[in-house]
Length: 445
Image 1 (cartoon, rainbow, N blue to C red):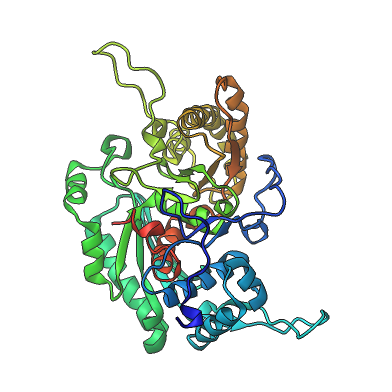
Image 2: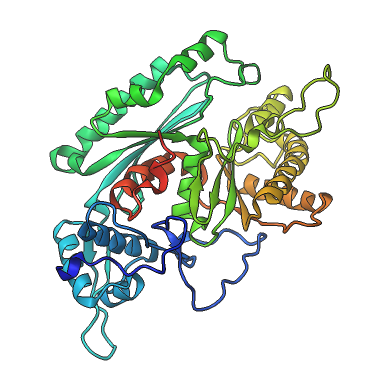
């Protein structure tokens, strides 16, 4: 068997199928992360994941994916360090990295001198080695991102609207995909791996809260968004729940590199979430795991009593903006950085006083069911408002009983508003270049 076709050495087989993105064995214990500290740069966090698993289409291709994943997780690495991380021989790494350099997926850095022996040459991902498109279709805005091979955003466009008309949105998606193809040119557009669409599973739901006309809800319910976007796209299309896609972005490019099991909460027009267990995104039977927005806030009692309100009815940005509007204030206060200042502050603090304890209840319930390491909260709002919401939630956690259950760390997310579209773009990149092709695609339509 050729040297570079030998599989990366794997640990003793276990009953479950090993993920291609699994826990790194650290030489020292991970220091606990203080929830009160600001989110560190994701690149500075220890990478606790490593590529392992079984071949996904030939051992040679699999080992190439293992090498790419090691470099993606750890940054620029010399060949000797890649060999140590992947358990492949130096000769195998030499053959693989030469092919990846020839294919334009890796680039050489400046030689590092000053150590015994030959100078080492770090290898890193070539940003122009591949591209992907992420599209977030929301209830009040749409984002289209072009990302490079490292996950960095190269192009961005946004469309805001009061109501999400599917015909208008599909027309805009077609125009923006065509514009990206023209801008990339003949050569680079062939390097686009696909389009990942992140959208709510029930974009036409909760029509009373949103003020959607019944006709609009019916049109969304009848639309196959995946098929409609594929008809407009020159590249393959995948579809995932928007907050699950945001969770993917945090898993790959944020705190998921160091937190193994977490509930992810994203606050937007409606609050929602995703779930990661053992460093893998979990979808559930219908792709809706982590749907914290639908959690009830109190007990159902008599048959004729009103149903308990859901978390999304008090902890969503829609509630805050409605409060501002009801007070005769502009609803773009957070975008202008004044949500906690001037006349907006009173309404914002009232929202925080409700949203924080409601989210704390969701954290308590999730911890009881899932034994989580952490709960990560992010959203399409300013970091100042995120910090205030985390403080309100943290203050409310002791009001719930933790007897018999471990309280998870409450942590700020690191991605922000781009998380959903960025997560969408990561779907095709991981499908084509990660050792486990099904890491995310198995939960995407």
